[in-house]
Length: 433
Picture (tube, helix red, strand yellow):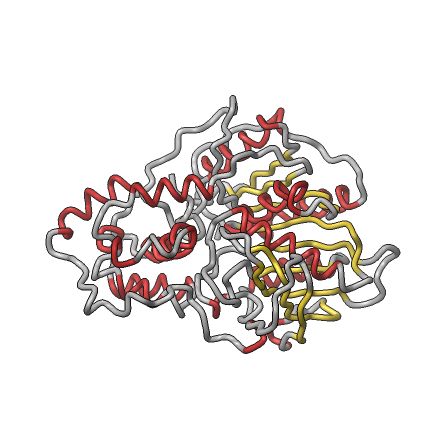
């Protein structure tokens, strides 16, 4: 199963998608000469200020803070004493060349505690593929503003990466745990190396797309950033897959493509094609080889439109999954699985997981399966189910339990490993009002 349609809408089944496409395949074919420039970079670049473009040499060392600027008031958080836009060096993917990544830093009001403000590294959910969708370049959702501000009010500083390719030049490797995880870890390095009022203790935290980034950061930290003191991870609405199932109990997952005319899924497909798979090899994976004439306008809009608007575009155009491609994409599915699935889920630090039992966007059975695999691999997991909570409402609901977990791991105190009591989530519940 693909994870790409997990942020807001239900995923689809590749074989069914192609069966549906047969009815239009004979009628729709792309005309490269008339479908737009095939020499386009398809990186979603542009539309942001010059802050995001670094014109000097990029340090070979990842995690170097290159520059900062104050965030506008509307992009700050109420409990922030300092709110900065940041630009730092990181490791590009898949070529491992030095790149720049942007993000934001929020520091609480008042005097820091002894040892400095404990740090949360926030990994955001799906915003889009274009630079203009970088969270440091546009106001955050009201849900995220309230959620992050609550942690600030609790006395935690927050560094929030935009991820590789959002804001800064180049493609955004959407739902690729390793580059997203490196972006998270290098944001920590950047701010801890500059600001003495930040503690060395840090926790990774993420929602949806960001859940994979936060868990991925904790997974690769011992090898990629061993000097960092990662204390644990908080993940809600998990969107992640692993090939390392081992002997973990797994649930049969429900049908993946139950609504052929759920046009919003096509918006996810644009992000999947451009970010998840094409970013692995832009020279070989060409839009004109896969995308139909009907799908081409949506792919172009993804270069400058953010996700929620892209969903509206797909609905207005009535572009179904069947319309988007002109050929089967089994080869792309293989690439996505090879590069995007976690090769291991043995995370050496504790993981808190919050799942809404009315989450139809990131299927509860998929979330259970990933947690089950982490448990079988030896990860200490504190899992929590929230009755009638949706993909979005599980974020604030999880704060009924996550602050105690965070406080404990930050102070090197033990937390309960609930793997022995893990139970399936049961039928999807009706969503809360």
